[in-house]
Every structure is written in structure tokens, then in C-alpha cells.
Length: 326
Image (cartoon, rainbow, N blue to C red; front, side, top):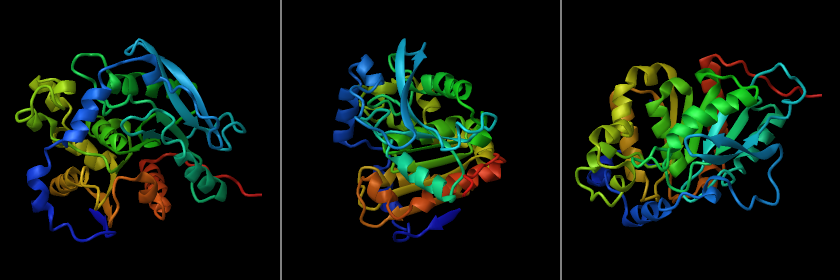
């Protein structure tokens, strides 16, 4: 386990343990409200921003699971059009609650500048639409198959449409808040699909245990239902144990959170502790005094962000290409 000490030592875990399974009242209310409708404008951003960062475009794919079009934004590296035989690794960047596929496209600006400078290799970035508050999980009632459309429809669509390295050695997943939570869920559940995970301030809940103490009309019961098997299948801690061998050998993990992010820090620390106890090597850091703010989290740590993914890709055996300087 690698620890970057941007904050005080983690000896205070025990103080937060009693709260690690709880969802705040505000978050539960937000989740319940945002999942009451399932409309086309929830799954394709409207209106689109007046402009996008360099090399970012907007697209849709037809989802049989959703029975509608679903939007995504795409960043293609500067050399993509020039060499039609070259394949590229992909980062899936997942947005937070209440957002859509346009929410975090500004992240492409950081990567683009680093690619042009020669710091990082050329990488494709996909910004999916994960719904307003799905946590990138399938709802029990079938109305929100967010995981199904991501794994079985979006990823195959990306691999079929663009020149990707179409296996785990060429795939990274990350996200902030709900995006961090969703990326952790997907990576723990499907570690064979990714070589790198970066959870940025995303809650990691023991959903199978929470259902025993939380009312059915509150999360997770109001979204994941009350079926024990479904709750267990969506529990990242249970999936960590179930898929531990694959996670240890195939997936590099980075986790970060602010020390003033009271709504997320307790479960993030609990996940860090679980990884440590399981013997999973990972990078963990905290930002002293930071609340729930991705831009401030990443500011000054941009190298830490993409260096981690690039090293994961290198270790996994992905062929990496850098922009040639004149």
C-alpha cells in the first residue's frame, strides 16, 4: 500500500466507524427525488454547451436496455486521425449526481495539454451519461439499467466505433463523487475489464448490510430493492472479497478525498482500510481542509492524476504512443 500524506495519519478511523454505513438525509432525499423520472433529456444532455474543450465531441448510442438513445462525450487525442492503424487506451470518466455526459469534459483540457507537451501518451477519454443518481448500478425495478448499458452496450460501442485497445490492459475508469462511487462499483464487480481505478471522493457503501437497518423507501432500498442477492451483488466490499485475486493481480487503485468532505470521507476511509486489510496495494491520499470539490482536489495534483493511469497502462502491457515533437 502506497500512502501520499497530504493529510494527518489515519489513526482516527475508529471515530468514524459507527457512521460508515449511513447515508445522509440530504443525500437520501436527493437520490430518491432524482430517480423518480426516466426521460430522454435525462439520458442525452439538452441543451448542449455552446462549446467543448479541444478535441471533445458529443455523440449518442442506441441502448436496447434503456429503450432510448444515451449520450456520451468523447475526447480523441491529437494524433488519432493521422494514423488509422494505431489503437489507443481509454479512460472512462464518470460524472457525479445530478450531472450528465457534459459535466466533467473540462478534465480533457488537463490531459490534452499533457499529451501535447509529451508528458503523457495519447489516450481516448469517454464521458458517459450515468443518469442523475443511479450510482452506475441497475435499479431493482428495471427502470434504470445503468450498469448494464455501461458494461454491455457503451463499452462495446466504443470499442467497435473507435480504435481502442479493447481489453483490460487498455482501460481505466475514474470519477468524482457519484462517479467515484460508480467507478469503484464497476471495478470491484468487473475487475477483468479495467487495469486502473481512481475514486475521487466517491462514497463506498456496504449496501448489503445497510438494507437491514434502512427503511425500504430510503436508499438503497428505494433503488436497489430489498432482495438480498441483488444487494450483495451491488456491495463493493463483498465484491472486493469475491474478486480479490483478480483485483490484486489485475487492477491498480487510487483513492482520494478531502478531510472536510464530511459526507464522503468516512466511507472512503473505510474502503481504504478494507483494501489495506485485504492486502491490496493501492495509493491513498487526503487533501487537508478540502470539502467536496473536484477542481480544487486536482489542482496542483494533475501529475498524480494521469501519471497513475499511465503507469497502470504501462504495467498492464498497453502499447503507448507519444506525440512527436517537431
